[in-house]
Image (cartoon, rainbow, N blue to C red; front, side):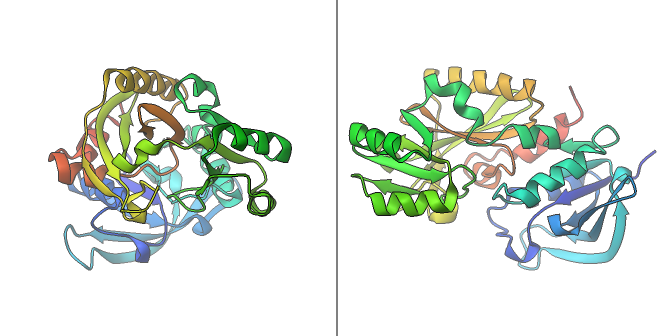
Length: 309
């Protein structure tokens, strides 16, 4: 029988916000359930003669303390000896991220990995929503300047964002065709998402939490004054929210689709009742804010159902 080891592929522990971090919430709940926590960053993952190993820190976590972890020891660890692995490093979903999914996919028949590395690689966060366009605002994904200019002229106010962007980084609002800005953006990012601006963002978006094909909670994130960004890392304030019947219907459809594609935990976002196309599967966030607002710790639900089909 395997030891109850939870291996986490995460981002630099020194950058963790202990008040808002979802990975920390999940890890502390696992620790309460008897798991030992082995933590590593993507650059510490290796493929060696058929084995997938990681240079891990065996850590002990502490809740509600400034010094929230202690390193018990460092170990080169064969990841097949873990009971579960969480892929929780922050985007961008770059080549390094893709490489780690190939390594972890090699052992996915031997250890539970959430989210499944094949699924993470193939459910591209902004491109997966192509199949859900009927629920989205007018959207163009292109690097063709002629098409881009036509789109902006038609919809007047347009949000542009990189396909592999995250946390509201590099998101811009264009209110007219600015060829200089667009060319600079395309040179940097190639294909880019252009989407009709929804003014309802000033009242907040809605982040829906999906586990194993089921809707389990929702918060609204209200941008700070003068901002169009609903990301909490950009100063947005989380508040309680309810889903409309339309949003529930769409969320259920997306949830079924994600389960079919082997995604266990995801976050999807609405503005003005429109799905905005960010299907967050690489490292979904917001559970700590939801716990603080609702009193419900979805990390408990996460672990109660992680081994069920």
